Length: 279
Image (cartoon, rainbow, N blue to C red; front, side, top):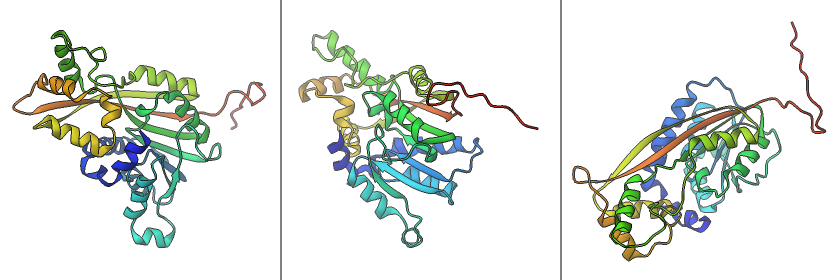
């Protein structure tokens, strides 16, 4: 999907309705957290909405914008105000994969990732790497798509299958997204403490299937989301997609999560660490 995301940089903003709204709701959750981070990062930053929000909240923090698509990072640079560039406060772009970050261990205080981690085949590796680069007491906040995403198209696919058209098992999408409980287990396995998970449904509506497809193409996720079905098969699925009040609903399950990096309980050599309170 790297090339798809790279090609989508020029059109991403016009279609990123879901990402913007999810990012806004993530930011509201930061109102409940009392932190003063010195180093912040937006993982999978796209054109930079997330890192700009973090800069607004934490203007004294060093801002990093990480994406593996270079054109997205170019967009982040272009959208940073000239004054930020002159003062050396513009987001610092880093071209990297979240599963192998070119950052020192314990070098971050806040890691943010909006609707990116679900594209990884194995998020566990990414969670372990994010745990490594966060300092003790650091916060990971993220959102991911959950398994009920595009449930309307899943229902439509099952109808088509019952009519004798074979597909991918009736999922409606090629990618199957993780349940929030599985994600929470991954966070614990990666070493995070007290993960908090919850979900909400958000629904976009479209007049025609081609409008839905155009949005996904502009975001660079069409093939990753829908898979390699032939157009004739998709046409049958879209024909079974039931409108509501004249519009086609596309529901997205948004899984929200945050977790903290706790102090280690064992030393690198395996010995237990015992801490004594003072005072």
